[in-house]
Image (cartoon, rainbow, N blue to C red; front, side):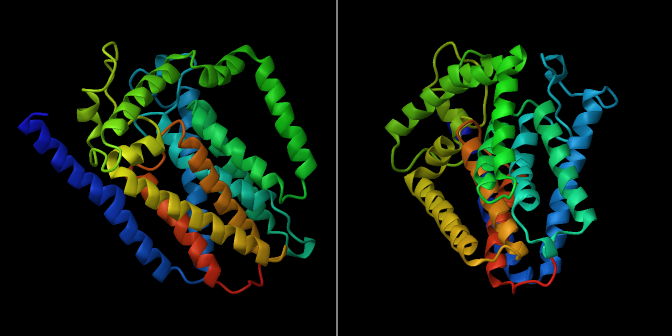
Length: 338
């Protein structure tokens, strides 16, 4: 690595450290100390929902031709919406966990006396609907697989459990009967499409990097420069990371960073499961906690096919989800549902 390249990587690493780690963690600290009431939590959920609706709505406008799809994404078959972002996968990374969150809010068991107001129910369905529109029109397969996994988890807590299982089976059957959809899904697992093939090549190069730097990794923002020495000769594409959350964590933050992330996720799930066991069905915190667990499941599953963290908005979203779970623990049992 030349001196000029080293200086460039070092400068970029400082920016990445501030944007993806320092600032989101500071945001988290402020979040858990400022958000104290049920009303504040509800406002955050409505803001999350409105964001998903806007993303899905713009993606729909792109699909019907009112708004242009940038670059070459509109020429792909099928065309891939980007919504308010410059590239389509950004939709799935941001909206996927939020779709899972609202699926939990909408589908989890609630006593009849605590049914949410009609306007809330309509809002939940609108968020989920526009979120799925965004994921589908952007062909965010990793996010859709993550949301599918979260829906399986949510189904165990829903009074619509049997219907959800029937629906999931029907979705799989229909997907397998429609050739373009079937080829898209099968291509992910068989690596027969270009996107998956490129990912496999990157992952092999990433594994070689880790084998040479198993403890310390190579540093933040180092992948594009280091990958030059480890990629296959025929691979010419430029990528900021290997499109794999766990490989990216290991390479850019070392083994310690990967372990810390794993510890944080384990604590998140332990805290969430503990709350689920201790909350009554009439408490809105139950449905929200299950939704938060579902959102993290979506991130973790999606993480095997992409990097749903290393981006400013994604890092803030991740720590906001963690913060919400902590805030819920301190809230008293409410009188009103969401």
